[in-house]
Image (cartoon, rainbow, N blue to C red):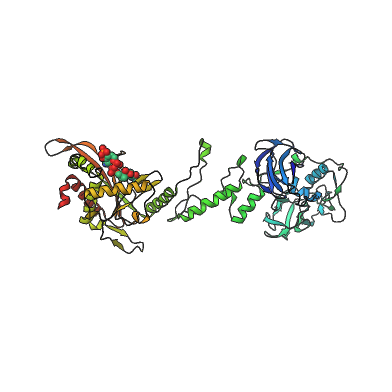
Amino acid sequence: MAIETINIPDIGGAEGVDVIEVCVAVGDTIEVDTGLLVLESDKASMDIPSPKAGVVTKVLVKEGDKVSEGAPMFEIETSATSAPAAEAPPGFFFFSSVSLLFLFCPFRLFVFSPPLLITYAQSQGVVLSGGPGAVTQPSATAAPAATSAVIDIPVPDIGGAEHVDVIEVCVAVGDEVKEGDSLIVLESDKASMDIPSPVSGKITALSISVGDTASMGTLIGKIETTSSAPAPVAAPVAAKVEAPAAKAASAAPAVADAPVVHSGDVYAGPAVRKLARQLGVNLGEVKATGPRGRVLNDDVKAFVKTVMQQRASGGSSAGTVTSGSGIPAVPYVDYAQFGEIEMVKMSKIKQLTAEAMTRNWLNIPRVTQFDDADITDIENFRKDMKAEAEKSGVKLTPLPFIIKAAAAALQAEPSFNVAMHNDGEHIVQKKFIHIAVAVDTPRGLMVPVIRDVDKKGIYEISREVAELAGKARDGKLKPAEMQGGCFTISSLGPIGGTGFTPMVSTTEAGILGISKAAMKPVWNGTEFEPRLMLPLSLSYDHRAVNGSDAGRFLTYISTVLADVRRLLL
Ligand code: CAO
């Protein structure tokens, strides 16, 4: 075991480059080439891979730091038994380190363009020359020519990398290209590389396709040089790294002056691009959350998750507009841009409720109608009975009266005691009267069911509501205690409000919303009388129930509540 410090490698002479991502943390086990940091200058983003395997013991940099070659990044504990990291050959190093001049759109550089290569070679003290194995490339400093010529375009030196995936062919036969235009894009685990055209001209043949692999010298195609342009002379060009030696004497553009291509509006690293390609994700649709609008791995995953969730809930897969009966997707909103936010995990009950609400909302053509029931007499009776009820262990509220009135209405109007069958051809007529009651709990909304309400008295119903509500709040309700309802009552009476439009469940035909009772002046034919009026909102599934049945049903409830003696009839 040994503790070793990993320093920033040669980054092409760039100084004070921003650390935009620290990819590992203390305790992480890393391999040779594991991405450690992402650096970014105004010209390029660079993944900095680990030269060694081990376990991270210290992180010496953080996002926002500015670093240069030699700055310590991490301390790692290397295993004595692990093989020492192979000394990267210059070509390899070029590929995995400076050409870590990674070319992310829109910062793709032509890393492998000769000037850069020369620059890098200079910085590394290596001689670039022709000779055996050198790539024959058209020279940009060719002599003028009067006639056109068709020349081969080989893949230039790509830092020794072999069999790199061709992920994009940017031109077609017949296309006119300018020197520097992208011909193909190669991508390895570590880098995306635009391979630019060495000359201006017309593509006359293509020998490479997406899915092929390419190495230095692989033929991309042929180009007929434009007659007005200087015809290139096929000449050996400094594209082969021969050996570390004295610095090349000739001047060459500095790395920072390398051409920058703003090709497209997606800014993402090679690993992210690869992940997106593997998952079939169009990066243009992914919301970027990284620094300066950079798409991160997590952004791609979040995008896929959203799409899958939308599909599961019947939504469209991506865009925001669908035709026909498709449900438009909800666009992603970055709320953090408006102020501080916190992501709060929904309880399982809330998630299931949300799912059920969406299902009900989308499936049920719902209509809500309203009425005020005069509960003055019930209230007087309730007050008279309150002490006695308490002796029997019952807290008497208006709710059991309403439950009982609803049961009576279901008996009187069986057309409401139904559910739509999902075959679309039948209505399920229920012959039992079970009433569900919405209960507010800290974990979310629970809806226990009181069975055979028609056979039970007010006290019994009241006791059951209290017992089931208690179980709901304690999380002790059994699934069977929440199933089989014919009709639901949702009471917001103790809270307030004058009316609301409750959601109908697909297993029932209606739901009654109760709002806060209030004293109101009611005309009795000769004068206004103060009466306690209870606002009722009846929502129903208009596939199963027609408006006149619903009107009769609600009127029946109001009438019974106005005079509970009717329950005896
Ligand atoms: N108007 C005015 N006052 C009302 C009322 C109404 N419509 N309904 C109840 N009250 C009064 C009660 O009489 C009681 O007052 P007193 O103590 O003076 O008698 C007080 O409000 C509290 O009642 P409660 O909530 O203890 O009892 P309840 O029988 O009315 O309700 C239960 C029981 C379990 C339904 C209730 O506790 C609950 O969870 N309600 C929330 C339901 C909900 O979340 N619905 C929305 C679902 S989303 O569609």
